[in-house]
Amino acid sequence: MKKISLLTILFLTGISLLAQDKVLKVWPNGAPNDNGITTPEEKYDGVRVRNVSEAEMYVYLPEKEVNTGTAVVICPGGGYVIEAMDHEGYDMAEFFKKNGIAGIVLKYRLPNQIHEIPSGDARQAMRIVRANAKEWGIDPNKIGIAGSSAGGHLASTAGTVFDEGNPGSEDPIGKVSCRPDFMLLLYPVITMNEEFTHMGSRENLIGPGHNMELVQKYSNELNVSDKTPPTFLILADDDEAVPPRNSIEFYSALKRNGVAAELHIFQFGGHGFGMRKDGRPSDNWPTMFMDWLKARKIIE
Image 1 (cartoon, rainbow, N blue to C red):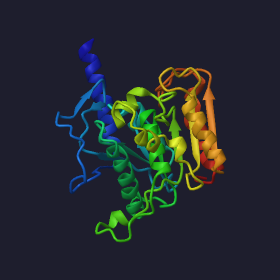
Image 2 (image 1 turned 135 degrees about the horizontal axis):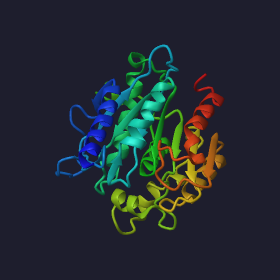
Image 3 (image 1 turned 90 degrees about the horizontal axis):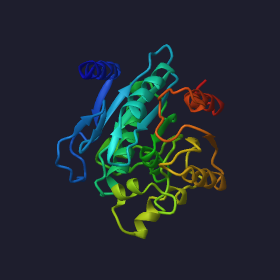
């Protein structure tokens, strides 16, 4: 039985790898900083990874016949200590690809309590996609970011703290905007406020203790402005890992700032459902998200 299970995992993993059109390093010339992880990267339980010290992007491009010109950078979750590359990464990219949207899975460097590491990777990934938009058949004004759980914190960080690029950068990619055009957040960690954060994600990102400067910096409900992109939020009322208040506070901040948003709270679904299908209403979120993109005229 164990051999069959292993073969099944390898077969399914192989399908995902074959579906990727490109694999790119986020920092091909070396990252500007180091997360201090020296243990070799390790895959386990299918395609979950830990000890990530080099960021990569896995690009899934749709066929020209169905291409909508839209793209989504996808940040898998895992409490900032692992990354669930399957149901919160590759599977999502496959769905987007089939529906005419470029899906770019970001394997970001884990923070190891060096807080600026993941968000630096996410912003650079946004710049890379926008810089390659013409070649990849993407509209540079239709590039969003998605994230699940701690990946939702990363995505919402990129969606609230961004820049339009540095005109003086020696690197052409550095001149490109890293602002997402829309966000998809699944049961996201939003805050570092210990009253309703996910403490594991908080400690892995900013360390133990009470550094209030970092708590405020990475409490993304406090960083929303009228420049924050339109946002689609999905979560379950029975989520016992990340309190629903995370999404509710973020939605409320979006509305206070006049940002278009849609929030769906399913009665059942728990935490971490991603692209899994288990017969619950939360299975329907991908179709609901596509309808939202159509309503926003991001896709036709």
